[in-house]
Length: 163
Image 1 (tube, rainbow, N blue to C red):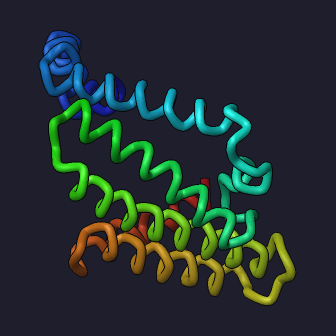
Image 2 (image 1 turned 90 degrees about the horizontal axis):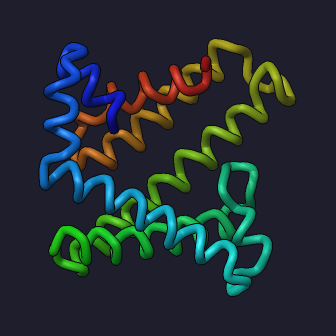
Image 3 (image 1 turned 180 degrees about the vertical axis):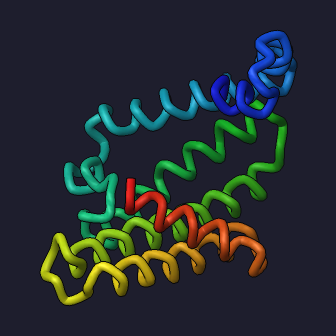
């Protein structure tokens, strides 16, 4: 959060400190910390089967990763609602959408990577980048709720793959 604020405020540390110590800044930091703690607590509680605990990326089986995303996003929704005073129903609805989109993004990126030049080579480099862009476009549009999210999603997916 500090790095984003530093960039947004053209390196003005005074503005960064002011932003981070504002009521909204404190709530955002508290929300992040509590969410991370809640998710870590769920992971280490022994309540989840190992296949769900380990299902953090696209290499996991789709049902396992979706379950993990649903659990993580439900926990984050409860924290956001409690800290920010927002509607739990709205937060859970958004969390469900995020779980579906996160799972789709990770599963598609993994499948494309497995099919690309470093994988089975069924896709050449250009086709793999185009596939990442199309998947990113779909997820970006889903997150934005309109086609306006397509270009940022596509650019982010390709940049993420190249990084």
